[in-house]
Length: 555
Image 1 (cartoon, rainbow, N blue to C red):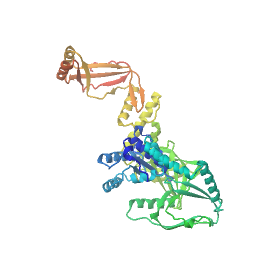
Image 2: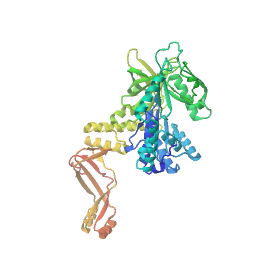
Image 3: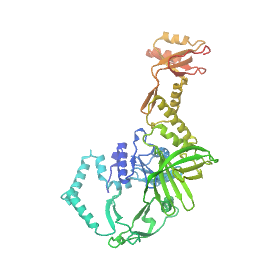
Image 4: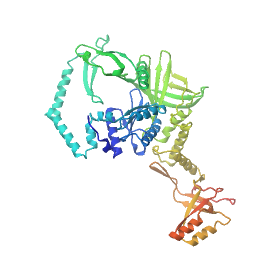
């Protein structure tokens, strides 16, 4: 087995984590990497399975043991990942857990039920053994390592003396020969993400009586008292009844056997595992609908258009998969025609780059979807179909505080208004938080001609002479000092973007010198001093756009 020098790679954490990310992109063909320059949101890459489940992968470069500090980092990543509402979350770290670490990891599922697997050093080494070029790429500065790989490559070329041309010729001949095995099935081979050979058998034509069908017979079993096995059983039942995907291991199969047309030799194949995947049926044209949150009386509170693009089917019904126009909200509608029931499931995924106004409708819908209200899904077209059911669980992500969806809906709505009024449009910054939301409100108030209160309790001024200090102290005998400051620009920074609202005026009213004695000492010792002045509580500092305005006599 290949030995990846994880300790050396850990000297450059980004290199180590990027190497693992590249590996997972090969193992999971649908995996998409996340640009972590502004924070990765608790995920290095993610993928959506055929049945729409969101799987998040978090890579860490740690080696040695999972210390308390490292555990806190993992827990912070989980808090961030929870905002995306994943179905599964895997930790990829070159540490094989000891019993204490296993108990800690298992305990995370109490707060984060989507935690699935710890993929440790042994697992990573095993997978890298099938992808040595990735390790070469990461360690090309190592001369010894490159020489070892060159020697191995030379041995491989000795087997195929003519190089690629020999391989192509042999592959073509084998492909031609294998098509002669069965008149009923075309045969194609490939390697899966784990380096295993996969044989694809495709019917050459219709088989109405099923005589040429390939069949799997087995007793399916699931271990009791195992949470992972319980979830696998539920996914198995769901896939059979309503479509989807589930993978069964050898432990789940007893007396498994394949059978099919003569000549394929299926009876000699040992079944080590089975992946059950429902055929994906594209919906052309897509099915358009509307998700509506209603009061119990039927009065609508919020709605959002959705488009269902494909479906999968099972024995009892099927599942429609769709999303809203921005792709932020993904929708799964499981339907059961026999008993006329349906279940609607949402997942929330923030795109890498999205304008704030695109987020507002989804967040409003989430904020208003509370138990006690109703959710209705209507489909456009002749003979309109509507499905209505009570909301039993809040749509707000588990890691959010109550009311947080409404807070962010208001904040993103304000940012969208600011962009519209200034004609400057940019994606939602990765680090947009409550502080930035407050600054957006200040900017809108300034544009409306209002005065905005400035934050802080003190201001500081410099003094370079004893006379200046004396004069400054004299100003505060039984009176306050007001300073008006004209600024050429009013800048607000949001992520990498700045908005300039133009010239402004700032007014500060001070009522006391807080450090005169220290200032005199600093002046004598250094030739200059910083004087701290207390802002008057009665007249807080303000800012407004444009030139100075007349103040009332009372002020």
